[in-house]
Length: 365
Image 1: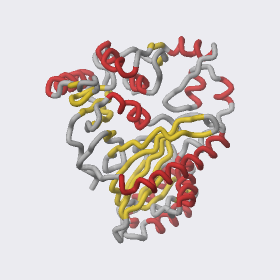
Image 2: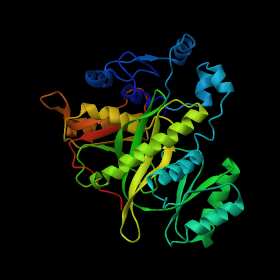
Image 3: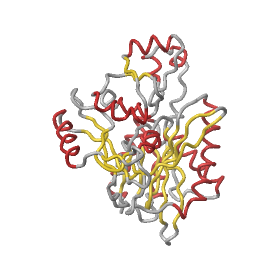
């Protein structure tokens, strides 16, 4: 996956930056160069040498492994961000940001660290007759997130919670909400804090896993505009709370915060400003940058996929390129057609791809 998806870093860097990985096919780099310039592809040995000479490495996500691999010995030895990068941060941020904007989290996220705490949290959050959500402390893209019906007598929720306790020392327990719309707040670091890059729409799978990144008009999607002011208030609260936590921990880097608009049992529509804090680059960071390549008022949807073989990925791209050829408008922006964001032809099985000019996708049910 790391090798196949490396070209996504094209959309996060700047002209002349180096990307650690094998170069994709020339057609991909030539196509996107008109909007994003060119990147040099370098191997790990060269990258380690450059980092040692003072160049800055900006990985998708910081980790002890990245620090070790590229010779950042001090950072590796002083690693203290395990809790910061876990869902412990998501729970505390949601409560603190909710207090600032005056919204008590209806999801009632609880960090359980013992079996009695787990049992109490399950009982409290399943009491409304709906579903309960359990989240492991370390995972991404929907992995480690499990939904359970309000049937605690089956023991499935308890069993998964105990598994998380054994592996991680904790588990997050929440009430499932009726989501109407999903989006993410995309932050990048600036002097002394965080800067809001923008709001990114997405549509996850029913299980909470990675789904579609969305841009432009999506006629079948829920309209966020009536919630503009509370969304903006949420952004400022998150910027303040996460900025303080990052500063206290010494973390300087990108942050993506997943959020939603949901409907309560009595029909009110409310903001959940934080379902997940991701202290790293997210697909939303790619999406915000990528949007500049598309014509105004053009619907865009794209996603990451895993194919059974390299030939399956290659054939899929070939078929879609013929069925939906790229069309540029008079300003040279993409107005319709199939596009891919990663390479073909070198054994890839993971790929990122999408369509412009489609009619959008249906909202979650």
